[in-house]
Length: 193
Image (cartoon, rainbow, N blue to C red; front, top):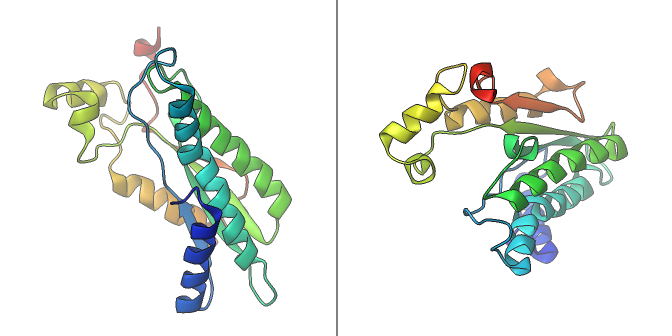
């Protein structure tokens, strides 16, 4: 459980024991079922925030511990965020709030932990995964979402992975505290009015 500091510490220690060090972490835990804010319990909202925000903090803290230990050479942490943290997110309000928190956390930790650990986030729009039809409806619903995106399609998971790989790589050695938008240009302007 990524919200359990002891479990996360054990995971990080096992990685270091196996590989000798930890250079890169991508925090990609998250998600939320549809639930209107007024109808969901405080416990529901608390669990959504814990999964989407607090787990990223817990993993980052443990990664920082080993990336800055004596003899360590630092590292890069990439948090996967969402456009839901930057626009209204009806039906997933606590998810949107948590993802906004991830971006704020990213910027704060980037300042606290520089230069040893670089912190960045990838702000992701709709992604066509195996669950896309469950979230957006049938093929017609998925096509309707695709049509709202200037690039003409939702992101493929590979698009998100390549953005994270870039931010973790030496190509981004001077980038910290950044939010890289991976949303295909967002919604087409005509659809925003």
